[in-house]
Image (cartoon, rainbow, N blue to C red; front, top):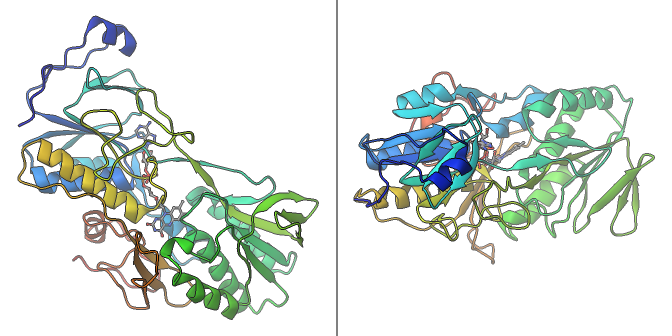
Length: 412
Ligand SMILES: Cc1cc2nc3c(=O)[nH]c(=O)nc-3n(C[C@H](O)[C@H](O)[C@H](O)COP(=O)(O)OP(=O)(O)OC[C@H]3O[C@@H](n4cnc5c(N)ncnc54)[C@H](O)[C@@H]3O)c2cc1C
């Protein structure tokens, strides 16, 4: 049982003024967990908490977005192989017995164990999970930055120009400090397959990446596999190379060489939100330990792309959310022993033919534990592999979060 002196949530005069005059954390009876963020980590945490705590605890979900967005299938959309499917957050919250606030976290007052929302509401918490994701930022002027559903139309237009032969030289560039590079390789491979299917001759595709090997995040064994796939599609690779600028149709590289380009496609850079009341590193990310406890704050947890964990990836976000949910449930008296995050990467790479499923523990420096297969390595097969989220989405009739031609994953 969690013991907290200000369980009624009344605010001190000082905090009240910090929270805006007249705003108070309302009185309440049950212990309350507040989850901020209606994305991958937030929804996974909600499902995990309900699995551990059943309905004994009040859960509040703060989300500015009315729909849960499944980003990974945005890469399939320009090729008509899939769509960015959406699910109503209100539906998820209602099913899980959570109170939904369509609002944004503005600041945390850890001393008073309270959050303030942009709309002026103040909510006290017994445990807080911050899962607000990251900001995606453009970084290479003149390139098409692909960051999800909003960029599908632009990428479709690009494909048309290359399919008609108006443009021929297309370079895909990985940014620095972005470790989840899989979407860029998917765009390159799918583009090559798309152009080949249309009999387009003369297109020159290149991938430029700061990684020593493609898909380096999966360890040394993934590189040769990816190199083979790129070579089969006639895609040139420049590894260990950073793009510096685009000028008059030329892409300047840090190696001193220059590539003639008609178009450059890249992924967005990511930065943290640096919300007031939460610690953050130089890039705005929230520092967490391996139980996802936020450094220096009691009963505050964070999960997902907004944390300082190096790999910003959906599957990792769910593993962090699970660890945080276990730690919170244990604090609330549930009979669960919290385990630390032992990150395992799972990636479903769209290649234009059958997808390749890859799995590797992140701590494996030798690459010995890397697996790749054309049959699913986890079930239900999905782009984001989350213990609770994946079966939940697969069982949801209104969420067809699969790639065309792969068949609908049955519930586990
Ligand atoms: C094109 C693309 C392809 C990808 N492919 C894959 C893939 O194949 N496999 C994979 O595992 N991952 C993939 N990812 C990464 C994956 O989508 C992210 O890592 C994952 O969504 C991170 O989850 P999150 O909950 O941290 O952030 P998000 O899912 O972005 O959710 C953050 C949520 O917080 C909300 N929010 C923002 N600010 C506030 C605030 N102040 N208060 C409250 N809520 C707030 C947002 O509205 C959002 O709902 C891909 C990403 C992209 C862009």
